[in-house]
Length: 275
Ligand code: KIV
Image (cartoon, rainbow, N blue to C red; front, side, top):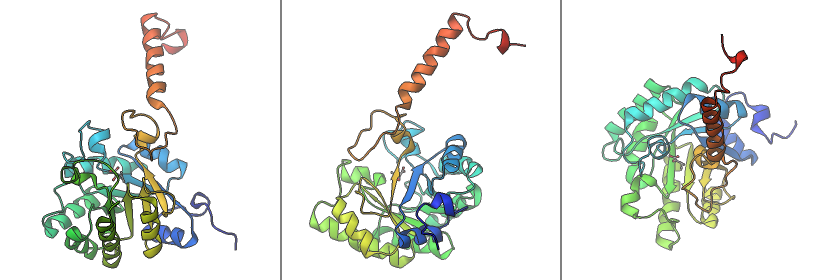
């Protein structure tokens, strides 16, 4: 049998089981965020494995300073738009701040709304032991759950800063314990955000479910980036882990300026562009 090394050539639909298979085979998982139909369609056609409808939509789409203000209704709106575009990738949707932390019944209702109203494939939750009741209750309804450890942006007011997490031994130990707790509960994967690369590598080798890193080095099972950051649409956010594949902000400004020039000089529309 030919060695499977690139999911784009072998899988017509990515499921949580496919991600597990990819981890076993050692094939890296590629994940990006999307919040709207048009971008999600491009990502899906390009062959991305996982699309995350992240609560980073709060920053990127709505211009908020943190991820906290985005509501469940707004997440459902973004997720529904993405779901209409995607046929191959696995779509994971963030449960927003305040919809799962305090009460596992409320967490279940929030997750059910995302699955029912948006038609998502899975949900993601930030935190470990402290949210495990919510995680278990959602899983018990047959909804796939992805964990998120390390820098968890919904807790920014507790941390006070977006610096690297788990550099200290106590925090690293808690993170490892949390990763095992999430795996034992039945999560299908975990995002590890902004933690030392050697810690991320250790967690990835200790647990059997896929670990997707963002600012966590290359010893993980896959990578995730915020689409608008990697395309250079957003320009202010420049952490060391971010690789920019484009400078779309400048390109778009160039096109818009060319359009303004054409309108003002009446070179647009020309004879062929009118009826
Ligand atoms: O909301 C988001 O975009 C995320 C990624 C940074 C992992 O959670």
